[in-house]
Picture (cartoon, rainbow, N blue to C red):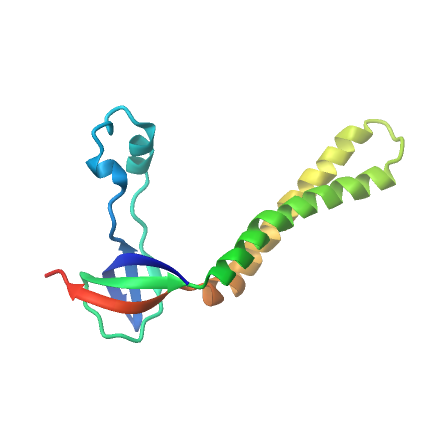
Length: 148
C-alpha cells in the first residue's frame, strides 16, 4: 500500500474529501525565490480527492490514506503502454497496407496518430465509466487527531 497523510476538508453522504496536508520542501528552502520548482508548485492549487471511509471523521481531522500499488501499476500500464502500442500498431498496419503509395510516410504517421488518439479516447471513456473511478479509490486506514 502507498500511504499519504491528508486532511479532511469535506464530508458528504458517507464520502470523505481530503487534501494533501504536507507542505513541500520548498516552504522551508532558502532558495525558493530563485527556484522554478517553487514557482511551478504555486501555480497548481490543492485538489480535493474523494476517499472511502468507515471511520467517523470531522472536517479538519488528519488521516492516513492508502491506495494499493498494484492498482497504481495497472493504471500506469493502461495510461502509458496502451496508447504507445496503439501508435505503433496503427503505423504498422498503415505501412503494411500502403506498401509504396504516394505520400506513404504521411499516411503512416496519420494512421499512427489517429490510433494514438483513439486509444486515449477509449481509455478516457473506460476510465470515466468503471475502471479507475471505483477500483482505484484510496481508502482511509487510520485517524490521527482533530486540528480544531
